[in-house]
Length: 262
Image 1 (cartoon, rainbow, N blue to C red):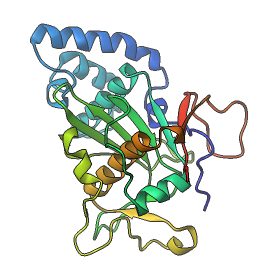
Image 2 (cartoon, one colour; image 1 turned 90 degrees about the horizontal axis):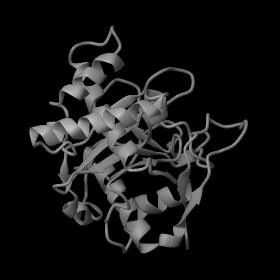
Image 3 (cartoon, rainbow, N blue to C red; image 1 turned 90 degrees about the vertical axis):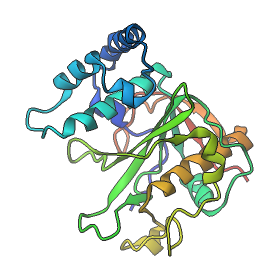
Image 4 (cartoon, rainbow, N blue to C red; image 1 turned 30 degrees about the vertical axis):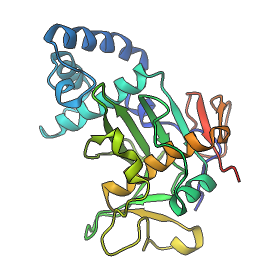
């Protein structure tokens, strides 16, 4: 199994919004409507009530999608708008750095490098499956994060990004104060088992990790924030991959590569 981390892969943002310029007028409309109503559009609870959001979701949603999917689409739009407004901050975590964060806690402060961004994990290194779920586990592509004006962290994990099929899975995590992030760095998220422990076939050969709880993802994200703070020279801006590649489809977005520094 190839644990790809050489460049930024095609992101869920680009898959869901192939015409990202449409988000410019949408973001302005959302901000104007929120200001007129006196609500904070950086909080999903308020964002999802806006008429401009509802109209956009109606255009985006598949006609075959069930009614309950509306909230899922709206949550994706929330993170896409925040990601877009924040300058499309894309971080690619190298496999060696990801393993380091699983195995040890960085010394830095768990302060996010931006109010919104996307952390892309090494392809096929982390897998999500809820305990007792008979559905096949899905590879975790990464996580959107967005911090509201009130200091609440909102995270949307993305699974199942594969070039051989359309769409992907989206897993919203419980909101939490970003001020608590330093606690997550050392927290034990699983009961009765080691965090990120895996029972996947081939786990020993490829040293794969499983994620079964929201706490494990928050722990990984907090450790990523702390690692950037403790070792700023581990991150390097990089342009989008140019031309044909032998690996997965590349993203057209510039990104910051975060590697392991001894």
